[in-house]
Amino acid sequence: GASPGSPGSPGPRGSPRLPQEVMPIVLSGGADGCLHAWNVALGQHLFKMRVFRGSNMFGVAQLCADTTARFVGCGDASGVVKMYDASQLASRHVREGLIKIGSFRAHTRALIAMRMLHTTSDNLQGGAA
Image (tube, rainbow, N blue to C red):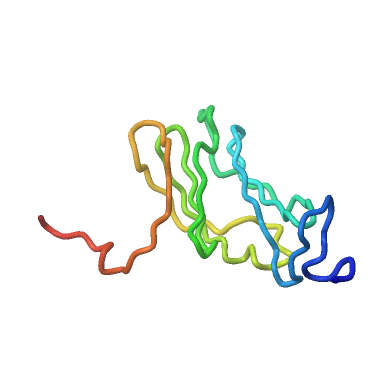
């Protein structure tokens, strides 16, 4: 069997211990308009960053990441979507937060669902119908 602390051996509270190079991250968004990042394996809070300010009383309404965990999107109750580069989350010393890529008003009312899709750049170009 695996010795305690080695990859594959039980971690805290019986959870499987992950290989050293893997750092599972959970992102959470709250009514305070802040995004938090957590190292799941260590139960450690990595950073807090404000993504929505002002009169938005619902804060972060939606949060999603692409399948590679490189990009993160979040939306609020006013219909605004913000996109972030999350590639630096792979670093074990990240404390600054995510890098903002852009922001746009996606809806005139509250954003209630959000999902990232992968497609080729050819499919993303607009054209006349």
